[in-house]
Every structure is written in C-alpha cells, then in structure tokens.
Image (cartoon, rainbow, N blue to C red; front, side, top):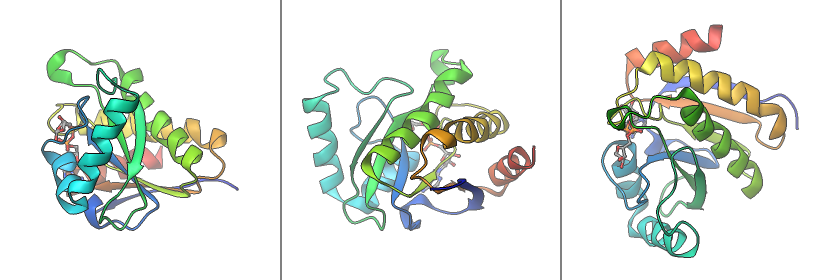
Length: 175
Ligand code: APR
C-alpha cells in the first residue's frame, strides 16, 4: 500500500510472471493476432471459454473501446488476464483519452480483483496503428495519474516486444 513501482522491459507477456497480464483485445473478446493471439495460444481454450461467458453475461455487444474486464488466465503464469480494447487508428479512433482509459480501467479492474502486480503491452501500437512514442507517453501518464486510486496495485510493468518500443517507454518514464 504505497507508491507504485512502474518499469519497462523487453519481453513476452505470455511468460511474464505477474498477478495480471493485460490483453490488447478487440471488442469481440474472441481472440485475434498479436498479443491477443499469443495470450490465447499460451492460456489454452479455457481463456476463450471465459471470454465467451463474459460476452454472454455482460458485454452482449462487445467490450467498448477503453473498457476492461478480467478473466482467469488458463495455463498462463499469471492469475488473471485483463482484456482491454485499444483505439484503432485505422477506424479514426485517435483520441488519446480512449487509450488512457485502457490503462486506467485495467488498473481499476486489477485493484478490484486484488492483483498486486500488472503487466501491460503497448496497447494500440501494433495492428491498431498508433505511434509507439505516443502510446508510451499516454500510457505512462495514465498509469501515474491512476496509481493513487489503486493503492493495492504496487507494481506495473510495461512488457515490450521490440527494442524500439522499449526505448519510447524508457524515455516516457524519464519525463
Ligand atoms: N508480448 C508483448 N508484446 C507483444 C506480444 C507479446 N507476446 N505480441 C505482440 N506484442 C506487441 C506488438 O509488437 C505491439 O507493440 O504488443 C503491441 C500491441 O500490438 P497488437 O497485439 O497488435 O495490439 P493492438 O495494436 O492493440 O491491436 C489489437 O490486434 O491482435 C489483434 O485481436 C487483436 O484486433 C485486436 C488488435
């Protein structure tokens, strides 16, 4: 219950040992490529089952952009997967507040379920076409702004696939 540690590292979310890994999902919650595909492949079919139940129970029309929802993590080392839907630049979703909401809502959900450590990918920086440097700035600011409101989350790790994306996050953390 203190200040949140916020770090960036190069890595693969499917092998990151934290309480909750955040999935860069799409609104259907039925899987896809990128992080979404990798997490579902590593978690096993149970994750898709849980996502189907979330759809049926609460998000009939799909998870809205900027929202977040937790499921179990199947065979992943994490205990929870927190699914969030980033803004898609190719669909004209360019409002940074939408992207900031992904990070804020994911941390709020982590706090609600009792996750003490959370690992994020660079949401929207892949298929959804956002500039990694802008994602890094928005992500770091959103996590720093949300931290006081989620006291039980004491560690947030940005886990980045490429060296280039890592550099953007390291720069954003230095500001
Ligand atoms: N671990 C960490 N980061 C990863 C991994 C991984 N295993 N796989 C990919 N990444 C990185 C990408 O290199 C990119 O920098 O995560 C970032 C986000 O890329 P995407 O996974 O493409 O996510 P996003 O841009 O938000 O697009 C979401 O893609 O996979 C589909 O179903 C998904 O429709 C949704 C869309």
